[in-house]
Image (cartoon, rainbow, N blue to C red):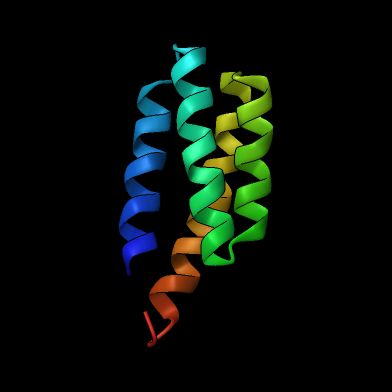
Length: 79
């Protein structure tokens, strides 16, 4: 449940920061760590790509993967 909330907040911040490459890199780094710690490896990998590029073009794939992760979390009774 904590990752669902934190991940959603970080993703919203990433979308809002789409014009600020430095901020994108900082937020992507945070999301990468949180995602990998929660076992969302693909999301962590996409966050790593954004962290390296700092480019807004890498935000959309991250959003798509977050939707998949969030759907999985919502379907899981353990969360």
